[in-house]
Amino acid sequence: MTERIRVRAENLIAYPRPTCMTYHKHEKDRFKLLAKLFDMLDKKRATASGKEEVLTLMDLLSVDVEEQKK
View: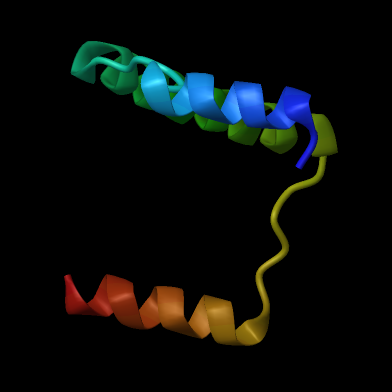
């Protein structure tokens, strides 16, 4: 090992520090932000395509079956 790496390794061992500090509120806020961003992306993709959803025969049949169950 070089002298520089040895000194840094010794300093790290002598004075350990966390790489980042996180708090539960910060994590909760970031998770909520992530959920909002995914919702916004879904809405953007839905309106950007400009196409309506095309249902296959099997999809139409399953819709009819579900409606009859109600």
